[in-house]
Length: 383
Image (cartoon, rainbow, N blue to C red; front, side):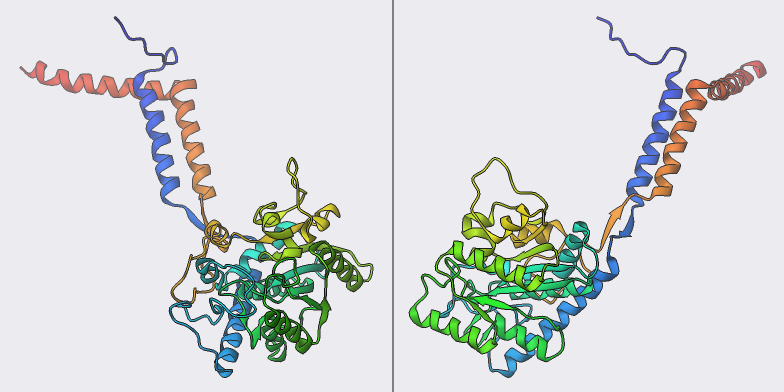
């Protein structure tokens, strides 16, 4: 049984081998000599990460001054952004790996990236929902908004999940006030709720709820005292609109899983981590501040699923030392050298034309064969 091999008529195997060899060499060179290319908003990302690092240092110093111990087992990087496992204002279970991963100043660069994708004009208003669960990410969001020259309207929920800002004497609102007093930021929350289940501290002890109320009063911000999660959503939207004073809100940034902001634990998974432009379709949705803004055609930046989000931007998972500013593919990415790629394509095309469309290659091959034949014939003539 004979095997049939197809090749273009009139083209030798040698010509095809040379074309294939040229393509292989071009591919190897393009893969081997990739370049690190800066990503959009590179300078803003660096500045936001540096500002985040400074804010984290200020918070750590304040913790130590207040006599709050930084547990080296829970916080091996010594960031000062990891709280306690259980306190009277702890709202629910938290994952230590996510908390450790979030305490990375380079998350500010991720938020800059997402704000850049949303294409928000400088000076625009951005609504922000933060909670006590991820204080490091709250700081990163404020830093990113500052470097992108955007004006945040921040509403907080004070209770925190395990390992968050759940230390009674140093909640997120206390951290926020410290950062304003130390002139790191000039923005703080305009209102706050207890947080936790239904955004009103449901499930906490009477003492826990009382401590949250005292924290809000101590911070001197407007208290959101809701009767249900639906009422909490309504109040938050009213406060955002009231503060905007008829100016358009160009984006909503959610940090973590505050009940009113995301719509309970079920609602947190309705939107993908990162930038969302439209309301999800085909599923029954739980009401939330995020969905309310999407219904207004306002893009939503949803910072959740922290470990997968970190991996997707090349950030270290559970760092054991403070990550260096500028680390991660969010800043630079290995990309193909455009000049080398173009040269490789031209070399392949030139080889194909020389050996397939023109007779240059065939003549060269013919001359090579003739020379080889003469070289083999000369010894025979000498004999």
